[in-house]
Image 1 (cartoon, rainbow, N blue to C red):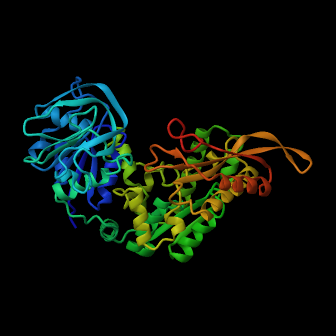
Image 2 (cartoon, one colour; image 1 turned 90 degrees about the vertical axis):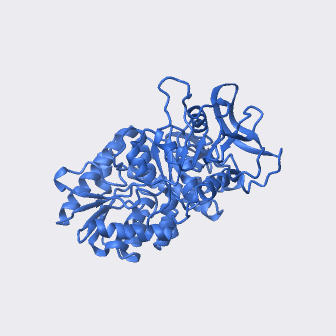
Image 3 (tube, rainbow, N blue to C red; image 1 turned 30 degrees about the horizontal axis):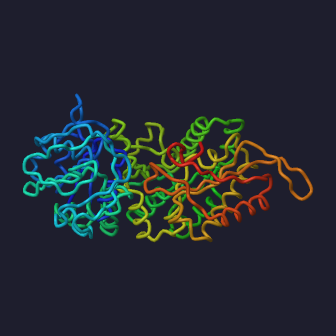
Length: 519
């Protein structure tokens, strides 16, 4: 099936991936490409419309990113967002200047042309305020010939504008972010009403197409996959098994750094319930010996990645003739890779997939999820019948608990951390807060001890930190406002049930300035 496609040209906005996700949410296929991608590569997608992202530059600066000529020559609708609006204006003969009062954050938008196709369904009357998210220092001061204003804010007389004859649209605000409540509808209007795209990018269609694509690529060959139990590798395994059956072999390396009961769940789910050929390697002692005395997080990552690759290599060679290596690369990996100037790079996520394999294995890559976002991967997993506990598993770092066990990693400390983490997740699940109210939640074991009192005796034991965040995209995150009663239950249970812990703290740091993980 050939899908209608929207091409998003990325000018460096921190929100560019969100634009792509919003387009996919209306079941239309899109590609996010660097603005200077060669014209032939872009036009090969036969785009039904272009979206120009925001960016940090000013259009009047020397060497500022420009609008490729093929965009306007294509004759299809164009939507410029923030820098994209300014770029469209500048290119078409309007004027952009530095704003006397910059706008960063929420602003009140007045839609002046409520009947314009871009604002259909905004449910607003003339002069009624709508909240939008602004992030700009420049603004349009003179519109290009043929354009008319659609909306304004107190600081931006042309917060939205259009040339309806040529189907050019531009907004100064960011419709893709959650802080613009009606933004999804605006993007939907552009994609479906103005560009006329058919919304056929559905889980069922994607599943059928990927099964066919895998069969076409693999033929009668055999595939090996490094299975971590995370969402991406799990869905990759189920998809490959649907396509080629027993010609897929999964290798699961249990490094002893997983959460409580996870290794057993992975084996049970894929070997027994899904009927997938799975080789399970118990290697906890090997990893712990290599990690003995190591406290630096980057050194931990390096050691774990190296050991994993060597063990995977040994097991893969035992399989005999294998022609393909599958990995759970998803679309954000491709985007981030291109953003670093590696347009054709295949990102191998440390430990979830396999990097650093010897060249003589000569395995061809199979990446059936490489065009999908995480939420789309979950939808495919549900369509494949994977259990909810796998499909909706929260993100987990490749090095596992080694980077949540701050300081030296020992079996005793890992078991302590596993127990505390399991209590936290169980209480969140019981409160119905594990899926929608927290996008990532976990316990961290700190390399410090504190004085406490238990019974009539003094204790001097380790400290557990609880981390729970809410986020749409994991690029930014806020700490979850968990109920005090829930935190009290978790703290009481951990101190009472986990040996060696006498204090529990809750992390209230957002990202930025902190990261979600502690290491």
